[in-house]
Amino acid sequence: MIRKEREAVRAAGIEIEVLQGSTLDAAALRDFYPFYAATVDKRWGSAYLTRAFFEGLGRELKDHVVYVVARRAG
Image (tube, rainbow, N blue to C red):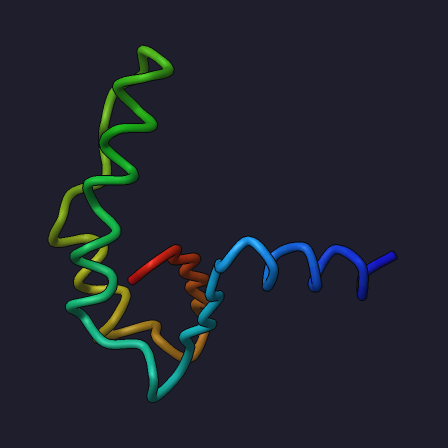
């Protein structure tokens, strides 16, 4: 089943990238912030994590964070 799901993702032209440790930089986590903010806005919550928080993850805890990015056509 997993192989079929992975093939469906490839066939749809979706590229998945996993960043962690040395491949995870502050820029990637900074770029994640708008997704976090949009989720909070959509769910009527209160955004208590800041852009600086996500950048700090890249500096201080990057060996403990896994960041998965899915892209279609770049």
